[in-house]
Length: 254
Image (cartoon, rainbow, N blue to C red; front, top):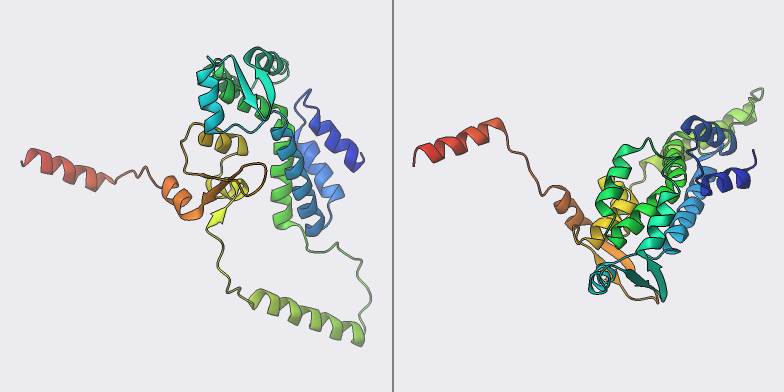
């Protein structure tokens, strides 16, 4: 199957594409790490554009929705009615009926347009997100360059091989002195937390995760601080049994 045909098949989520088929396709087409990373960037761009065609919801959108009685939402000049979103999401009930957890969330969000719109984005891009996850796993173990057939060794070849090994070792021994930026985007947040983009967008909409809105361009962009996300991840610490017993002793000894 050609590359463009397979991606088009994933974009049309009439049914759930088999994970094994996705893995076989990836291993056959993307024979180097560079090719896999380029495909990752392309797929991320496609998913981002598909999310934005319905509008990226912010806290301001949520407030506007509540003010209008949750009947419709104004997103970049377009009207998205609650009835329309329900109709669109119902199209996937039969083909994705076995995903009970997802449909349980849909029932909770049924009267909340921003959250229901997020559910629609998730189901529409289900196959693409699976494809993206498999691509990232493959890129981690994919060779830097395509494998070449072994050639009979000569003295010149051996010297070149030794030189390549030395260059490779030098590259691995080099340590970058530039620290990573504390200002990160949604992709880095997903990587740190293990959450999907849909879940992060939903948490920003519900104001459940610390974030900022960059207005340097015409379209507002979500930004996060790495230390704040790390603190947010560790906010619910579970104490040890010894700590619990010490607390109980303190209560009874008062």
